Image (tube, rainbow, N blue to C red):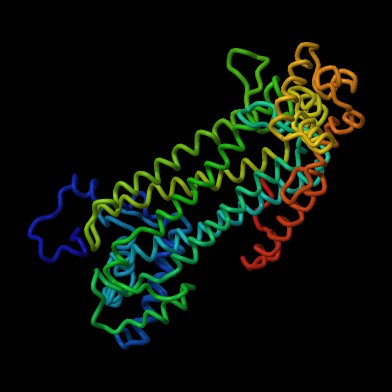
Length: 475
């Protein structure tokens, strides 16, 4: 079958070239964007006199029939058509005849693919944002129940200071909030119409790009034709945003792996989201969070792959750019399932506050409070108080107990200072609630942070134009 572009060629392309050159095997998932864009392009051609009413009606009817066939699984995608754009155009011409050949007037596959791919990216940007909001809502629901659940806060994976579990969950949400904001900024930056710029220099038909931009929901047309067909910043932005999101998910997953171990036992993962061993019958493995850690790596690779493709390309369009889609499709699918399953894991896990409290009594978590007490009560320089507290910690170590278990007279033996009231300072709950500065771990501050994030969620939901978060129920 002759190629739609084959007029100047004397020989048929080889089957090897067809296989190497074709993108129909993966870009067919852009079909709905191609048809939607073609409908608006046809409407524009009608408005500038390229099509008459009869031709326009035939094109719209034909495109709708093709869409129905694809949805029903009855459409044959052929490698000889190369890509989704030529596949639909060829099918349209077969259906309606000569009118179908007019549809490609005043556009190129270069601006056509830029449109279809950009529409895919922008739509999935919104979908991913919605799923992050759902995940945050689930996390905040758990956090509200645990603003007084004491656990060890850690630095260097060593016990540091007492915090509450809700505070730790809010820290997760702070990461995901930035992911939503990053995606929102990318959406606004890339919400411009590429269609109508032609191959790389515009067209002589007087395309009404403003009309098409409005009809397709874009902010405005792109500014420069050469840049429009050349750039894939919109795809790279999404790849970067997803890589950042999966990095955050990976860090959450790492903590879930640690917390579900026998050494921590802070949580128990649901049997529905755990697996066993083929040889050790007692095992219950945290495979979901482990896979979430691993999934981050492939999204980093997809970002680097497209950066590597784009880095040496001259303006304007080059065939290398065909390598832009598969990595994006993969990263999008990875992000969507990762968000769904992480939400499911968190909403079904069992939390063990008693084990968190037990672990908080190990590691001298209130040592900093003792140093602060010495500064306030005895006006010691902090460095001196720090040094003296270190000696008291060593004394507790020798006795085999935590610093919070020392009596006033024990501390006096080391410090030779009056210690009335020190036991209250060394209490884990008192220590946690003493950190009541804005952003701190006190129960009061944690509740305020939850309220602030909840308000932000509601505002963001309204900006997204939805009354409730769709898709938050995980099947």
